[in-house]
Length: 65
Image (cartoon, rainbow, N blue to C red; front, side, top):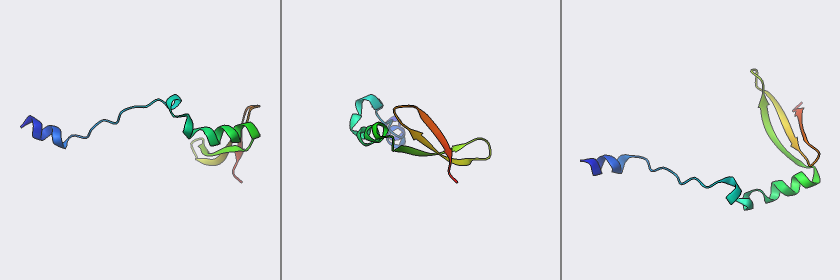
């Protein structure tokens, strides 16, 4: 009975730290170096849409409008 129960249980994913996945960050790294890396974000309780710009100088949040 225990084996039947275990067969229906969801298997846990193996966690791989992000530091071990540098290939996922190569395009973002190039964008940061050139100052053209951005991500859509929502801020505050009213969910104001904005853009987070990432560059070598720092971070900048700009209203989407």
